[in-house]
Length: 280
Image (cartoon, rainbow, N blue to C red; front, side):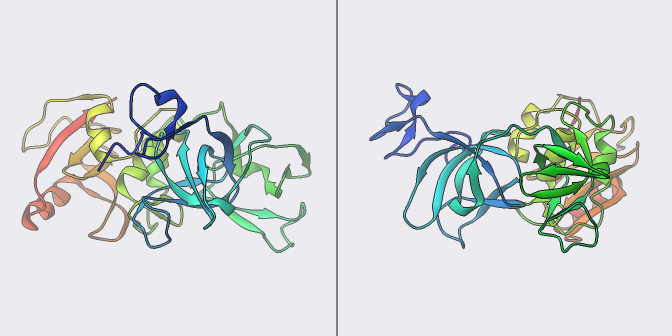
């Protein structure tokens, strides 16, 4: 597959790539934001196409093309992923976010009251532009959000391993990046983003770009909280010298377990050995 972070097709490419790639035409693109709780970014413009990743509410995108079938070809700003999202999931980039959702999931209410029927539920990592405050609620363009479930964008988490652990029990979803479903690299990316640390989307990128590799052997000694353990196509975060948290297809959810148990299980299943351990 071509680089998922490069907005270039034979018929269309981003203007900043002119001279670097061949395309029938080049466009500048239009800035927009995700206006639904979770927007699926797919490899092709159809609902049954493979899910490459997800974009959360408030995420900035650049739209390079919108077709008559209701699909937009976009590039996400957070990790540069390129793909197709439903056009109806996007809205104008009118106001820059001021806060992020810090709860695993929180509701958007039509008014500043928990007794009103929620309009939507936003996942941890979603971003909002706060326009005012009424009682315990922040006012946003789409309604009201419980203020204590948010944090200012410049207030980052100190412990990304703890953020990842908060997702325990969330179902595994290939390409997922929300509290409704998440995959292994999405969990790592989401946890690091909350800590203000840039992180690529896929394990194939993370294994080369996150921190630096450390020395290790089959005894798996000397590991520490926050280390990243990589298998081929899989990653987890160490919670302490012995246990890691990861979203995985064996349990089909985010779990914490002894690293040696995970290592032995993958070897027994023929999924391969640990290939690298990296540390920030």
